[in-house]
Length: 207
Image (cartoon, rainbow, N blue to C red; front, side, top):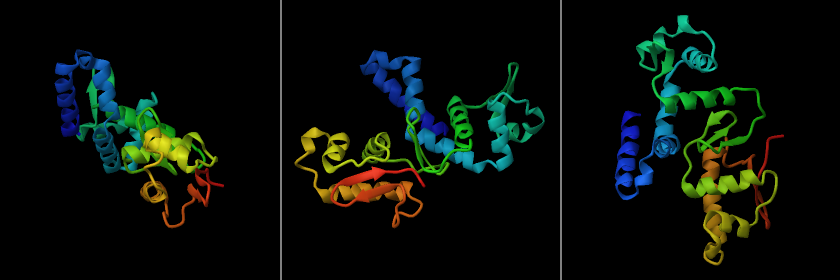
């Protein structure tokens, strides 16, 4: 995670030379929060923790007193004890843990997008990171949940209006197939990203 964070900081520093406005804390923080490699490292850290440690972190960020259960997290370097109290070592990881609180609430199954973080959740689990085109397609379908999106709407939203006559059905189907590989429990029998033959595609909630 340190390497991923340093890469973002170095890139932000280089951008600041050309664009001074990019040097602001808010801009750098936004870059860190949205960087896919930083998010991936947060997910790895989270997966490496045991269930008890995960629940302790969630409770800590929820404002509960979990002091007796912090020793193991302190040993692993996940939590630091400061004069102000227990703190998660990284604000990015703390934000990731905070989202776990939301995900663990009893909610219907299906596909959800944390637009602010750029994360995609399927049945309460973090989906693999999407490419830019995959994410644009999913955002389109998610914003029209239960409604059919035809070829023209897909091309306009994903590639741009100037590509209407350049992107054929096969290219769209290939993109849909790649997206299904990441969000469908069984891509061969899709239950969320549905093809409506002759009309387009739609994203649906589970029954």
